[in-house]
Each structure stands twice: as C-alpha cells, then as structure tokens.
Amino acid sequence: MSFSRMLKEKSGAVWEEGYNHPFLHEMGRGTLDKESFRFYLIQDYKYLIEYAKIFAMGAVKAKEEKLMARFTLIQHNILNREMDLHRNYMKEYGIAPDEAATSQPSLWNKAYTSNMMAVAQTGGVAEILAVIFPCAWTYYDYAARLKEQYRGSLENNFYKTWIESYASDEFGKSFEWFYDTLDELCQYKSQEELRAIEDIFRTSVEFEYLFWDMAYKRQMSY
Image (cartoon, rainbow, N blue to C red; front, side, top):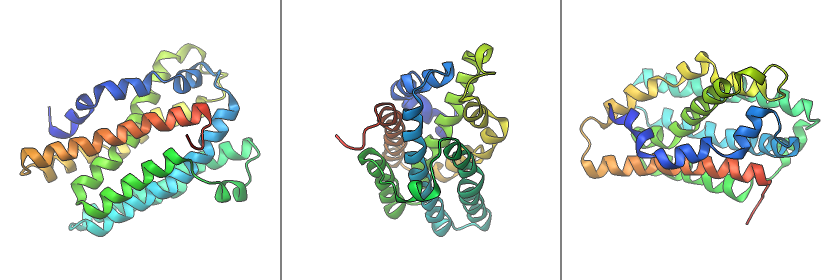
C-alpha cells in the first residue's frame, strides 16, 4: 500500500468514530434534526470559503504548471459547484445570502481552518495536500457507506441529495490525483518528515470529527 493510501489506516480510530457519529447516521435515516443541519450548512459555508484559500496557497507554492492548474480548478469547483449544493439547501431553509455571509464561524470551525492555513503558510505542497486531503476523502467514504447502508430508505430522505452528491463517482474521481501526487512528493522524505505529514493528516481527520459533533450539538463555543 502506498504512503498516501496508508494514511487512512494510520488514522483508523478517529476515522471510524467520524463515520459512526450520530449526525451522519441520522442523516442516513432521514431523522436528523433540521436545525442541526441548518447550523451545519452555515458553518460549512464559512468553512468552504477558508478551505478554498488553502488551494490558492497550494497553487502559489506548486512548482509545476499542471499542479498549479489542479489546485486552481479545485478552488473554482469549491466556490461554484460545491457551494451550489449548499446554496440550494440554504435556500430551502430560508437562509438568505446575507445571513450566511454575516454569520460567525464557531470556535471549532476557526480552529480547523486556522490550523489548515498555518500548515499551508509554513509547509510545502506535500503538507498542504495532507491537511486538505481528509475533508474530501472522509466525505466521499462516509457518503458512499451511508448510501449503501441506507439504500432501502433513501428515496424519501430529505438528505438524499447531500448523500448522493458526495457518494458520486464524479466526486470520488475529483481528488484521485491526490494519492499519486502526495506519494511522488513524499518519495524521498525522511521518516521524521513522513511522520510529521501523518500527524498533519490525522489532525485534520480529528477536526472533521469535531465538525460533525459541533454541528450535531449546534455549539458555537465551549
């Protein structure tokens, strides 16, 4: 198994804790409190804006034109295609654009995005990939598993669109390049450097868990 694909196993415990969080399984059953999902939508909107900035940092630090283009394309897709899913849901909830734009990020949201930016500012492209990788990878893995586990009752599930969007082959293929690119960038790194990248990756997986928990409890702060 390559270094990049092994990162999931290295974070196995918290990865599975994330999938087993009640926020996700109540989404799968269609029973999640819509106020919790509303809270999540606004917080994820704030998160995605900051997340997109990390891809801009990747484009700045990338040395190859092809990699610069990938970072730029994904940033575009986040700010347009992925945000469209959120905008549509927010519209259904009666969340006006001004409300989303002026809402404050929660403490956990700020901690997560601040950590990503700190890694992006101090690290190289490999570190940037490691800090952003868990967001897409966990979403695809969790949504695909939810779709399979609750396939018999998804038809009338309010959260069907969210689950199917992130479980789609299109979304899964959108970040496949991460694996080979990270493996290539890490090919000649020392064991100490590889352990640091593992820690960056695991920390983001931990923040993903905290994000679900924050949304479930609708917590802005401690």
